[in-house]
Image (tube, rainbow, N blue to C red; front, top):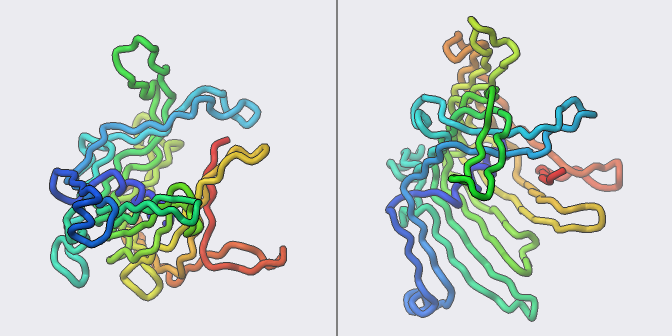
Length: 322
């Protein structure tokens, strides 16, 4: 579930929470109103729609590993249902009422997508830029996710830059919706005395909610039978014995070193979580539910006493190309 948390945060840095405007204050104005130099930016976008999204793997899977070496793509497209009837990704403000507050409780007081405070610091000769970001709660709707053969890369004289996919599409997920609460992050560029480029340290009020997640099995699909589906009505994630979800992550980008070409590392030191899965349907979305599943106090660890270390609560996720 932590991956969905990251997805929600990354998406939020491009979306909204109210008012179609972007407002910025220069150092002089900011200093006059707050007594502190720096730059303040409020980003307001009420909604964003994306028709399709493709992630192209230009050399596919090598033949020695069972592939063909031909370019393929992961796609996200409209699934003809609800918010994703005509668009693959639709993100808007989360105007829901919280368990303890009225509608709009998940938004920042400014009603902006994000409020940024930007300062530069000499840091004793090793300077850096500090960006403190507060992000409103979001309602993220994602359509069908699947795989398809990549189309040809557009030529230099092509009429558009679109590449897209071609041939048969094999769906993997029917779609899903994600609701988040307010989040905060601190970003440092240049030197990073905080120990990582991005530090997340906030509480997502109301936790994380994922709805209408369908996992498809196309191997059973025939001319007369639809693909099999494992459908989950709702997934809720919160801290153990709580309704809220604490975010405590450090995100670092490591550069090239010898044969290692670099990677992104996400270190999470969050505590135990409760998970509740409501409405588990096997075969199709309309099949009778087999019931709900509840997981209490799930804690992950990293490190190993076997190599002279200790088990540390949390997780490390490393992302790299190959």
